[in-house]
Image 1 (cartoon, rainbow, N blue to C red):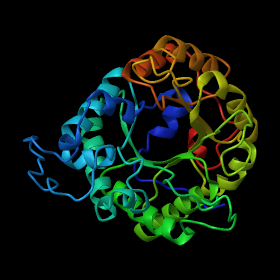
Image 2 (image 1 turned 180 degrees about the vertical axis):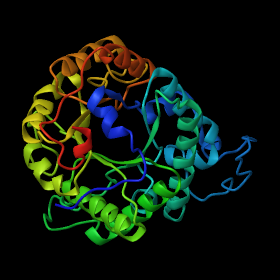
Image 3 (image 1 turned 30 degrees about the horizontal axis):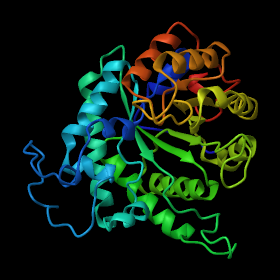
Length: 358
């Protein structure tokens, strides 16, 4: 088995072995609270140190909703969100790069900005973590690698099961460029998240390994899939156990589940993952319950409810990393951090990839 070395986040495996680590919450939910319009997404009126002036004033497509662009046009918004989560107790901060690949940005005709988005996002998260880090509580940047809106396993045409709108090679190239920029921008960890198509994830993991070989640097990897409904499977059809066996070759620091299901419905699948992956750390960051248009977050679980459910996971010895996905806010993260603070983390049987942590 290949030995995994790493030059960043060196304390993190030891921290995971000794206490439950807190991941931040939803970026999109917080961005929505700023109620930004088209002009704000273009950066119009912003005069801060990183102002882009009128760079995007006459861009030919609407860009409202392109949250990754805000790392360039409104860095003050992204910085504020990072700092709110850090103040709430987060140890790990995700970069604002969920959709910052050439594949995803092609929807906005901004594929040529993907590398710049990743660099800017990683630098903002790095600066925020450095600001809040202390010797007894270091903070870490998790370079977020999302699934893209295109799938390599599933046809976009119900009448043509063999049709595909993206190739493995297109995904690999997009992910390589993203990973390179995330690392150069200051990420400590790479988080391949919200995986609903394992083939997309394999392209990302292939690109990560390719970058590691080319650069000579290896960062810890966290892999997080998403169970899309009560069937207990990810969208491309695998059970949680099958998913783990499809990605374990990447030798991750942690594997887990996020999004799609709230904490109420996620428990049996986290339990299954614990049985399937006894040798690695486990992460879990559910969304804030079922959709609820009357809620200010769009979901029905309050910080008290979410933190109580996540605390039950921790009390059962199921998790090492906890946080929040869609609908969660700094209030949710603060409540979760408080709820799990007295509890011990899951103890892997032996972490073959990071033996010094066990």
